[in-house]
Length: 456
Image (cartoon, helix red, strand yellow):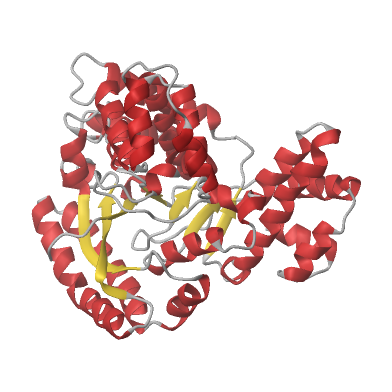
């Protein structure tokens, strides 16, 4: 099925790249309107191609990306490191052509088999047509930026390494239902993980990622100062960190712990609902520990469940500062990365089989670690020889089962899962949505994350 990007290339008779961007920019506003309508006439995404559960294919929706964008920054107080993906950069004229969008995509692909992202071009077209006509001279810039961004990863799109989707909000009802279930579980009298716990975690993650000046401003406002010196915000903008300043202002504007936790829940629930809607063959990229714990809300201890479900935690070279050219070169030519992806697939297959016969999480984790040891050593050796990788700058790659470690495959009953007693409300949602008597395939998928390194 043709994508929105295919539609633009065909309509303007230009290949991906500068010529296509120039063709979009040469259109009149009326012609841009027509192009946007053609983009939105593209059939909405149905089920994505089935991917083996032994492959990692994270799905990233715009809603989750927007909320967790700031938490993707390195935060000294949390365990997670940035994945580097900012979908909002794809339609932002301020960073168009800088490689910010494509760098994040390729960075995630180095340690994954593929990636599924919400289509920025369809989103830009929808935003453009929703504007009054007098504002469309500005909103058209989002379409141009999206075309430029997708041109940077055109080879990945055309070779089915990156897939795009656009549902037009078809997942919202299910996401709302799941979000309500998560919130209800947080509010339960017996809940071991509550809204306040989630807020405390968010505040630690958010504040520790701020500059010292903004941290001071945050403390002043939280202490009750309604007329603080806003110079740190102006300084952040002047230093080019306008996105951080905007996030800071947005959080202050709705400085209500419950509202902010609800936003985090919405981002997480949207991700789960979209994966289910699109066939259940994608994985969850956790941008923060908060998102990871929300996956297991409704279990007796979500923090423990996150640890129990973990099957892999192994150090790999950190490629946070690589240029797009370096990233593409490494993805295409690195034998070590090819070995990593091959061994990762085998290790995930092993983990699934071991969980099915009832082995303990510790046994599974040890087995996976041993299976990935050689691939990890090859990555480290290649980093030592590389002019761009830094062996001393490591990051942990984490993968965990969404349902296997606590679900029916190790003795949990279908009724228990449907009731949320074993693997939480996310598992119960998937079970109910499948309307089956067994755990749907999505519960065999994984959550993945990058974390600060620990000693191997």
